[in-house]
Every structure is written in C-alpha cells, then in structure tokens.
Image (tube, rainbow, N blue to C red; front, side, top):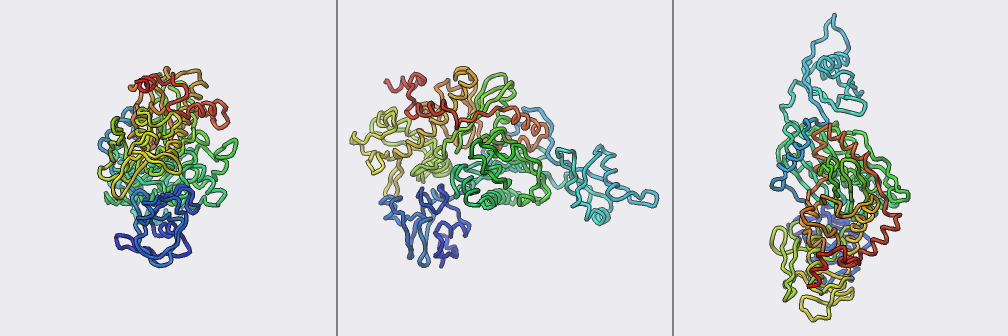
Length: 628
C-alpha cells in the first residue's frame, strides 16, 4: 500500500501502522504534542483526498474539517492506497537564513567582551626533521619535541592516532598540520593532516541551540569570528511530547532514551548538512561544536538517563560535562571534532540560561536585572555582578502555539499580531510572511486576549461573553469562541480553553517573579532592566503582555528583547576560551530556587489566574485603561 502526496511522491505504507507512523517512517514529521498514538491532543491532522481508510476520534475535528476530509493521523489506518495532503500547520517545518543584521549583532556582542578569538582547537604547522642514525627518537617523541619547541609542551597523544602515526608521517614527508584541543587536563592532539596547510582550508565551527521546541545551528567562521549562516527546525522530539516531562517519561517509562537521542541528532545533522552544502564546505573544515540547551535536552542529547530530573529532589546526572567528540554522538562532521556542552545549573535551569546571562552581560553590571526566557518552560534569573538567583516555572507550550486549538509557532503563516476594532469587534490581523493565515502564534493570542479584555468581551476570569449578539463570536460545547479569521474554506478561532492555557502560563511566570523578588527582599521597582529572551519574545508586544498580567507593570523602557540568547551564548563560547571559563563561573555562581515545593508560589499562581491579576493595584496602567 502507498501514501500518495500532492507532489506525486509516494511512501510505502503498512495498514498495521497509523498514518502518523507511516509518514514518520517516510521522513515526514507531523506535530503530535501528546506523543502520537494516544489521540489526546488531536493536532496531528492530515487531509485524505482519495482512498479507503478507517479512523476514529472524530470528535477532535470540527464539522468543517470533517467535510474537508481531515482525519487525526495517529488514529487513522489505511485500507488501500491513499492520496493525502499534510496541511502546513501540521507539518514540522524547517526554516533558515540569517536574519538581517544578525551577524552584526553577534559580532558586536563578542567584541564588547574585548577577548581574543580562541576556539576549542588550535592548528599548528610542523616541519619535522627526518630520523637519522644520530637522531633516532621515536615518531611520537619526534612529534612531541616539535610541538614543545614552539610552545606546546606536555601534550597528550591518544592511542587511536599512534596506530597510523608512522605511516602518516612518512607519507606526509614529515610536514604535517597538528590539531590540538584544550581539555581539562591540558592539550590533546586530536588530528594530524599531511602538509603544513595551516588555516588555508578555512576553519569553521557550529553553535547549536537544542531547545524543547526548536533546534538552531549557527555556522561560524572561526578565523574572523563571523556568523556565516544559520538554519532552524522544530525539535522532532516534539512528536513524543511538547514538554520536558513528557519526554522524560517517554525516555524512562517507555524505554525511549536512545530514540529521543537519535532523533535530535538527526535534527542537528540535517541542519548541518543544509548549511555546509550551501557553501560547499568539506567536512574537515568544521573544527569544533558548542551545544547549549536546557538540562533535560542536554541529557537526552548526550544519552544520559533523565529519570531523576522529574522526581523529588530533582537531581540531574551532571551539570558540567567533559569535552567529547562529534563522532561519539553521531554528528556528521569530522569524528574527532571536539564538542563542548554549556554547563547547567540545576534540574530545570540549564546551559541555555547560562548562555543567556553571557549574552546579556547582566553578570557584569552593577544594575539589577531580570532575564526572562519564555518557552515551554519559563526560566528567570535575577541579579548583577555580585549575585545571581534563578528558577524555572512550567509555562507549558502555549506561548509557542502548543495546546491551542489553532496554535502554531511564530513562523510563516502565523497570525502574530491582532487589533480588535472597538466598534465591530472584528479582528485586524497581521500574518508572518503575509497571505492567508494557517494558525495563530503566542504573541497573536496574547494580543487578542488583551484587546478583548479591554473591550469588555472577555471577563477577568477568561470567559468569552457570547450574550452580546456579536457576529464575531460563537458558542460551542467547550465554551465561547472568538473568530480571528474566516473565509469560505477556513476558520481560525480563540477558544475559552485557549484562554485558560494562557492564563495558567502567564500566572506561572508572574508568580515566579514575585517569589524570587520576595526571596531577596526586592520589588519590581528595584529592577533596572528586564531582558526578554527566546524566539517567542521577538513578536511579543510588551504592552499587551502587561495587560494580561504576564509581565510587571513597569516603565516600558526597562524592557529589552535579546532574541535567542541560548544560541548567542553558544556562539560566544565557540569563539573564546575565556568566555567558556566565564560560563563555568556563571553556572557555579547561580543560586537555584525550587518552586515546585513552594507554598508561596502556589498562592501567587492562584492569585494570577485572572486578567490581569486579583491585585489590580499592581497594574495601575491596566486599571486606568479598564476604567475608561
């Protein structure tokens, strides 16, 4: 049996596996936040154009979707050849290209540290004297002597290179390039190349951000310190669950650790291939890799058992990791290319947050600052050059489109901003990339909730008023819905369950703020800078986030968006030994506050489950808007 795609391409399929599994085996990955197979989320939707099949879970689909041939892929099985279409909103897509000005921003960030470029590897040209009867030291001793003469004494020579050393030196006529790497115990020789070619072939590195939702790769020229290009895609682990807890459960209770490791390495390899092929680079040009991610993503990537991260007292296997090689993980560059992993802090504060502190330089300032990295988890850091305290709260995937009826990431086709006409209550939307929308991302739904709340059609409890007789609203079995977009073929709405998800997420973040500030005896007014990180923040409108009670009601000039600080921090550490040491110092300096056992956090969380908050006095600008 076959699955036939609109392009005419076919996938050999089995009737014993669901459409979701058959598509996965054919290399087409579909969003399945609940892990696929359980049918809990109903988001792995595809359209059957022609052919026999059996399906269930129709209640997850609207009447219009059923009429258009939509099915839930994990609950649908072939009975013959099927012609199908995968809607863009269901597809795990790849995106790339360097955003305008990104290379300049990164270079400015690196230059602001005023440190030398010192990647993980050093290339040294050697012209060794040939052995004679009077100079008859061993080949290994000859090589080490040559290195010592130019300042590289006491280098470690691994056994794997000894096996071919004699032949390699003689075939190279004693002219070689030696590649060294800084290890914890000193320098180690990782590679020998024939001919003293030095840097002629080019020298590149990869800064990799392994996020819960996305994976990003930066290709960096290590000689100039310049960002060459980037590529990004969904983290394909998302098909096993959208949050870290569901992936930990899959890795441990379902024995899927190797599967989760393999799929994220496939992610990284696909992105590496895309950027290397674009510039026709040979694999030996990639000298080193730095990887940044939260604690769970880091352990899954390294193949470490994450089971005890989710069990009290919440302990990871490690927070600091020895330098390893790309080949040991199956990353498709030179197998001996050294791989450095950003240090983590605790079970739910990882290397991505350490990278974020480096990117913002908050650890070097006398001013008090807060770093907010909003993703599937909301991680917070408060402090300055003297101290840093950090915590994490589970925001869930809704800010990145997960768990929302028509939610999607902030990629092409997503509604990213919304204004509500105060007279007709019609939505005025903008769509990333223009054209007809495929769904709504986190910033779009925050805009809509804020505007509808100010208009009085969403109550402080998050309920949509359908008693006003407005044509932009409708009632369903799950409550009221607001119509963001509709044409003859498509409808995109915001539902009361969507609003409830946003309320829970924003309440968790605001409660995290409050508990941390109380812990150190500070208030929001004491904070000079609010740094917002993460892909979601790029489209976030600060005013709207304050209106719903996600961010504190503070002067808007205090807020600054820093972008993907995890990737930025990885880029900085890729280029500099001093900044790698600084990252270790930052990780060791942070004090971690565990919120899961805090009664104060639960009290603040409950208090925040309203628009904007039960304490309206904490939001004077919002109180003024709602009073008019």
